[in-house]
Length: 99
Image (cartoon, rainbow, N blue to C red; front, side, top):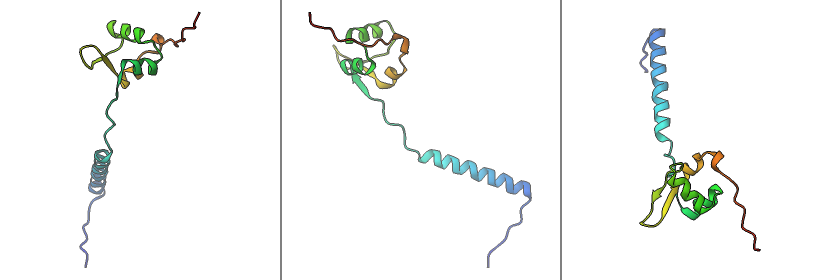
């Protein structure tokens, strides 16, 4: 034999709203975390963004693009920072032609 509980309409709506919030919180908790941001070397970042290595390093020195120190000589760049780099600073690179 099952037990029956009689609720008022307001109390039923309150409980169903609370249950929905709990289900949403559980679903949000189960979603996998975003993948870690990729650090690219200076050459990889320059090719990815379409700048020369010198232009990329100038942008870092000017503060337009944040860099990450890889070692005493080399810089790295986060892919998210490269994706957020304003398009007005990007110029297509043209390979130098041999004379």
